[in-house]
Each structure stands twice: as structure tokens, then as C-alpha cells.
Length: 83
Figure 1 (cartoon, one colour):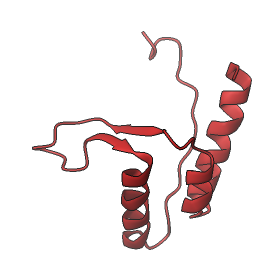
Figure 2: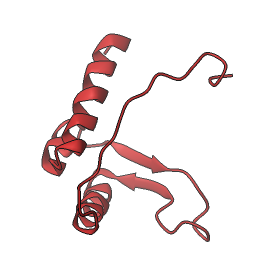
Figure 3: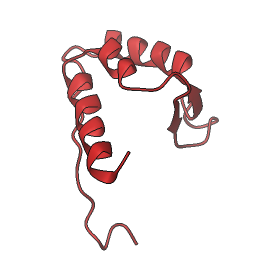
Figure 4: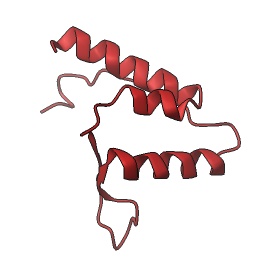
């Protein structure tokens, strides 16, 4: 996949999050996809590397806790922020 195709997939994935379409989010991922949540587990229990199956459980649990769903926005980092 090239950079433009990656951008389309990323925008689609986050649009599905915003629509509370967790199954749609999962459908954009390959079967061997992994998801990394940064942090130290002693401070943030959800931190770590997740398989697609494990992250699915977390996404569904998160959605149940959020009254208005989850809104995600893709932003382009400024060149200075990327350094």
C-alpha cells in the first residue's frame, strides 16, 4: 500500500470509530493486526500491545462507557512536531 492508500484507510477507520461502528473498524484491519497503546501498565492498565481480538474487546468496552460515542480526528503533524 502506498502513502495515499494508507491515508484513505486511516480516515475510514477513524470515521467508523466516530460512527460507533466497531465492527467496521475491525473490518479495516487485517487478521494479524496489532494495536499499541503507549504508557506504563502500572499507571495505565490499558497500555500495551493488543491482538485484533483483544483490542476488539477493549473497543466494545470503551464504547459502552461513552455516552456520546468516541470521536477521533486524523490530524497532520507539523514538521516541527515530527522532529
